[in-house]
Length: 361
Ligand code: PLP
Image (cartoon, rainbow, N blue to C red; front, top):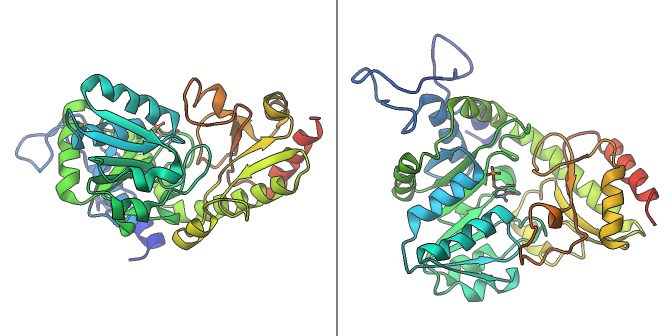
């Protein structure tokens, strides 16, 4: 089965002829009546979403979580022990940075480096954690170089690319993680996460999920399964709108710098082009007028909402230094604006951005 077909049909349970797998809103199951016992451990609706996402990420097994952070924390704590070293890059989602910084309190050493140095710095790591497209500076780190140089496990947060654009397991990663709150969920109505890989590793993660209680609720799994069915069509529009907005901003005289892999000026353009089908809807940029202009710009937008998160059908804009990366040493410029391009008509989005730019010096 191919991506688009599998995302609709794969793994659906046949129950009373229902076309869509129902939501099994039950915490417990009668013993000896089937293979389920308790929904913190496993649940039929959750398993359908897991099967589908495992296939889309070209992995053997998947395990779903209550959030992307649940996926990241549970996966990492399943795979490292006291005394181990994790190597990662600085330009990383702020929540992940804060979680990794916490690990030193438990005797786990975490080393942060520049994206361009990850390949050289990872040879002694027990675990490398990286994003396939970084948030918020939209870099594309050298996954293949890391896989070649690292003797430890390579865990890739593939949230910004989505499995439609990129499959890190095909390039040697051991585990792929998603904040399924973003493109997989796609409608800004669930908080969810998932980890995918070989069953021998995922089974360890699943055991920890059971103990940490980072399992998803069945209703979120139902909504996630519904959302994944339209992933391919949504991603085509996110890819197109992301590119259109990045190119428009890149030509504008009030814009200093745009971060998006399709642009000639992007440092990882060739790698992104070789590895990925598209680059999604997330882009970031800096205005000539810095932070003050960024504030004015954000407040002048009418269609694009000022909110954190990304990957939903509606476009969002935020200043990462104010919330997500606040107080962190991640190299994010204070005036950086991050836009998550939704799937609206691109002419409306460009008009909104053009009007907001008119209001700044
Ligand atoms: N990874 C990335 C790249 C993210 O952008 C986010 C959230 O913004 C997360 C992980 C965390 O996901 P969640 O908010 O679902 O816990």
